[in-house]
Image 1 (tube, one colour):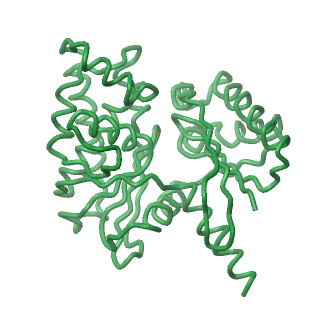
Image 2 (cartoon, rainbow, N blue to C red):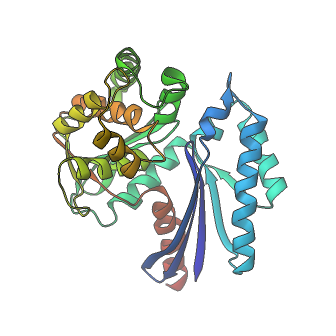
Length: 309
């Protein structure tokens, strides 16, 4: 059976088509559009420009789904529309104009599905799961492969870029300092994680995916490497700033590894660095599975298994 998952995020809108047969879940194709939806929020209101861009992308996806006769479709949206004052009205309009029913996923649900997707094939049974999105950051502490604590933080890579860097691609020193200050204030306020320390971090989502590609290219790692040394992440943060003139190989490196996230990977890594310091983590392991796969395992695979029983 073919299932389509549409994820309307703060940075990108993704559609992934999976073939599901019993417990076997295999992605067959993926499309994405980087529209920077969070940047279309002004004074807490999702602007007409953002709504129209979502509708345009979903019309394209729906044409594909109709042509291929794929009827099992799940669409959800996260921080950008969830946090907008007119988010529910915007979602209703988008659904009406496209014919696609859209679920507004709560921060708690997002963190839960992130955990299920990322840890499904993860060897570690204890650690921290972190998803740095465009408009929010989800954190889950798990032990014995069960969620113990979870939180959704109101900080994200695109939100930081929009607020502090503006029209520029890379931030300067003072802008980085402002991002660090907000991230540290936000992270220090999550009291429920006070007892968590020296935990292994599993990073998921676009920030870590882009950072992993850049990290491997910079330090001569293979593409199969999924582990980042936190001290090297801090070197990256110091190296790619607007105050410092980049040499040609560095410019080419960014163009090749993070072409669509060039403006958000530094803000995202600042959040990652603050979290790594807070939890005393020396390494970050990247997982390429997350909220979409978590939804499939929890709501589709497990549901079908229960029906079969």
